[in-house]
Image 1 (cartoon, rainbow, N blue to C red):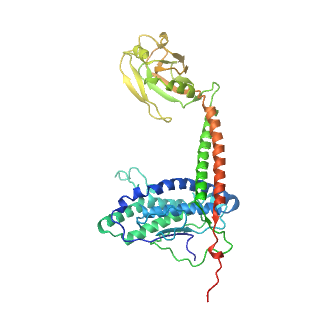
Image 2: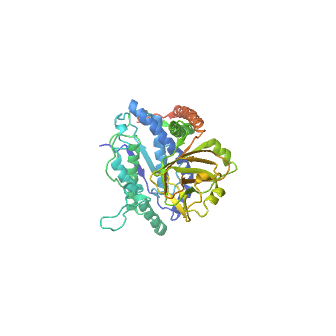
Image 3: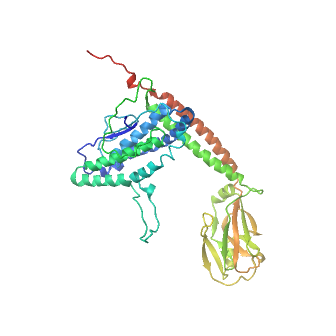
Length: 467
């Protein structure tokens, strides 16, 4: 048997400082920042590798070695910090193997990968392992809540740090008080990290060999019984600083291009929702009151918000469909509407639902019936029976909804709409930005691949034996 193609090894470096672990989160911040960018690049390059495997059956070697480097870097930082606390030696800033560091990771490069398996292994086939690794790393993958059958309350699993975090915390407390790292805890922590890294490599398409359901504890892997490399295998790739910068920058630009493409597609779909009048409508919400009127809170439009709203929102339309009687809707200045509704029983809408079927809040103002129906007043800036359109103007405004005959029990289906004159320009700009970002990102990724230097395979180097 050969060892598993993902090999995770670690060496506990003792003695460890009793209290250094308290500040390692701070010391590791530079690594966290760099890894944040590298993991974005990792995701983009994995997507590229997905299509390369799907069409050619091969994982491009420069991309494979870059992603392997990101996993190596991540494992070293995790081993130094709260993934293990197994060393006080600061992790190196490199994608390379760093064989002298006490935490190492290596993955055999697969010469061929299944073109069909790539479609399902990263999600469907890996689900059982995701459940296990979720327990190791966070517990959230198998957490649930709800009333127990015996009425005993709510049941939760560990939701922060998982079993690894709990064991590392125990090791940290032991270090603080005894200066020693319990070896049994160390072996278990490394075994769980080994399982998680194997699953990560499988789910990110770096191997077709299914991870074993086996907790291999301890810092050392099972020894390999055969050599994975020969002179016919693709030689490894060494990424210099220029190659790393080009690949990372290209992946970031490509990621931004994907984001603008999704946003542009959403804007285009929104533009297709315009009606014959050029309005884009929200979903319909039902508002009701047993009193004589419904009003909104004060809407203040002043200063720079006036031209901004006029250019971005455009014309506003309010549609109200009464369930029993025709409904009057009007927009008036806040003070004039307050005079009309003084002493009149009405409800003020304090908040609206953010999704269909959500709750709407009201504030009750007691009183009696109005002295006259709303259409008899002349202070309205815009009115309508069922539909109202209004061009935004500066001032303090409120919207009033009443039955046209000023009777109580107002019920209406309310729909808001606006013309959004900027939407067309935004959609065009987003697609132009998408083309630029994707083209620039692709170019930089290709440059990064070309800048990567090919190292000779160890098996290809022939030496003359000495006598």
